Each structure stands twice: as C-alpha cells, then as structure tokens.
Length: 128
Ligand SMILES: *[C@@H]1O[C@H](CO)[C@@H](O)[C@H](O)[C@H]1NC(C)=O
Ligand SMILES: *[C@@H]1O[C@H](CO)[C@@H](O)[C@H](O)[C@H]1NC(C)=O
Ligand SMILES: *[C@@H]1O[C@H](CO)[C@@H](O)[C@H](O)[C@H]1NC(C)=O
Ligand SMILES: *[C@@H]1O[C@H](CO)[C@@H](O)[C@H](O)[C@H]1NC(C)=O
Image (cartoon, rainbow, N blue to C red):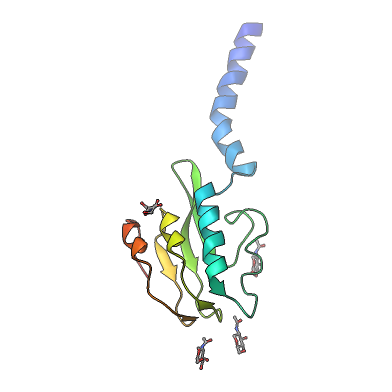
C-alpha cells in the first residue's frame, strides 16, 4: 500500500510539474534578456518610458512594450510594441537575438541609422 501511495504521488507530481514551472517564476531566455539590455542601451529615452526595463524579468515583470509567450517550455519575447514612446538613438543589432519575435513596432519615434541587417535572420518576424 505504501509503495502504491508513493507511485501515486510521483504520478501526480509528474502531471503537475509543468504548471508549477510556470507559476513559480519561470524566466525569459537569458540571451533575450541580454538583447533587451543592448536595445535599451542604444536608444535615447528622454521621457524614461523604458525605466522599468531593469526591474526583474522582462516577461514576468511587466516591462513596457514587451510581450512574451511560452514556446517549447521557455519564455520568449514575441512582441516589442514601442509605438510613440519619444525614443531616439539606434536599434541595436542584438535585436536579432530575439529568435521568436513576431512583431517589432517602433513607429512614431525618432530612431536614426539603418535597420540592422541581422534582423533578416529572425524567421518568425511578421510585422515590422
Ligand atoms: C504593467 O505596467 C503598465 C504601465 O507600464 C500598467 O499600466 C499596468 O497596470 C501594469 N500591469 C501589471 C499587471 O502590473
Ligand atoms: C512624448 O513627448 C511629448 C512632448 O514632450 C509629450 O507630450 C508626450 O507625453 C510624450 N509621450 C511619451 C509616451 O513619452
Ligand atoms: C542571428 O544572427 C546572430 C549573429 O549572427 C545570432 O547571434 C542570432 O542568434 C541569430 N538569430 C537567429 C534568430 O537565428
Ligand atoms: C522627432 O524629431 C523631430 C525633429 O527633431 C521633431 O519635430 C518630432 O517632434 C520628433 N518626434 C517624436 C515622436 O519625438
């Protein structure tokens, strides 16, 4: 009976574990966290619209304009929505590390320079 109970618990745990993972602070793919840091550093943000881009995890701490999904059991940035945020400066080539990005919206800002060619290797990108 004890053994039976033990197996039962193991089964329950195995079923519950994926849910616990999400609930107990799953975090964003580390290379994407680095990419967001690089993107922020190359922008000028006089109105401090991105001031929360250093607080906790990008996907779970509500960073302005950052939207994420769980893909293959990990949190990935799928949208950057920075429409009309008074941003200038340039778009860092590290944006290409956002490997699951679908939408990149920097409309109505004042970015200068060219669009990094590395953006071409984000195969998921649908809208820019
Ligand atoms: C996320 O931040 C925005 C402003 O940046 C705020 O309006 C919103 O209420 C916040 N949501 C949560 C769940 O904290
Ligand atoms: C952008 O700048 C304008 C002019 O200074 C200001 O009125 C507006 O509130 C700012 N918007 C944001 C999102 O920072
Ligand atoms: C795009 O290329 C860069 C550097 O060449 C690489 O670090 C990055 O992982 C690539 N991104 C994708 C989505 O393949
Ligand atoms: C962008 O810069 C131009 C010229 O410096 C300025 O007139 C315009 O208001 C700026 N737009 C935004 C969204 O900051």
